[in-house]
Each structure stands twice: as structure tokens, then as C-alpha cells.
Length: 169
Image (cartoon, rainbow, N blue to C red; front, side, top):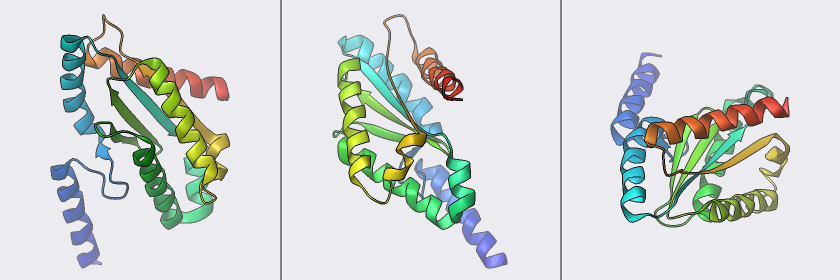
């Protein structure tokens, strides 16, 4: 018991230092706060678009309780890998919460973000082991507006997702 607790504690420490989520390989939400400020500044300086795609599994708690911890972790890992497969070099995946990821898309307009969203949905549908989640999935594409800073952009991204989930209910 003590060994397992110590190992789990060390894993969390290493995870926080590396900025990556060990179970999915995605960057942590804390890393996003640092990176988003730089990406917003770059987008404004170069006058290039910046988009984000928020990916949320709405009924993940139910999936977790019905299928167990191991299967839930495998699902999240598979989703993260699928997101990496459909994204470009330079796009970054962040684990925002237990049931959501954010894909940060530099140099991507809203149209490009929607195309990526459709590719991601198609890739998930093609995978037998995770196609059952499609009905419980929210994918919210959003693009930086000229007047926004990093905090406003992130707040709008997350609040739009909350509104979408409320509409689903």
C-alpha cells in the first residue's frame, strides 16, 4: 500500500513538472494557460487566425462507472491518439478536465477548424472500439476574435461548451 501511494505521488509530481497528462499524453490545462498567451500574441502580431476545438465526452462519468477505471483510461488514451492522428504538426492537445480535451490550432480559421472537427468525427466513427461515444460527444470549434486576449478567448471557448451542453440536456 505504501509503495503504491509513493509511486502514485511520484507520478503526479513528474506529471506536473513535465506538463503532460501521463494517461493520455496530452498537455495539462496549466500548460495551456502559458501557451495560449504566447499563441494569442503571435496570432495578433502576424494577423493569422487562431482556433480551438473543445472535445467533451458528456456522459463520461456514466461510461466510467459502467466500464471501470481501466477501460475509461484506455478510451481517453485512444481519443487523445486519434486527435493527434488527425491534427497537424504544431497543433497541441490539452487535457482540460476528466472528460474534455482542447485542441489548439494556430494558423487555422473557423472553416479549417470545422474541417478538422469533421475529420475527427469520421476517424472516431471508423474505430470500432470508440465509435459508441459519438452520441455523447460535443465538439465546439471557436476562433479568436480581434478584440480578445488569451483569458477572454479561453473563457468564451469554455462558456460556449457549457451552453452547448445545457442545450443537449
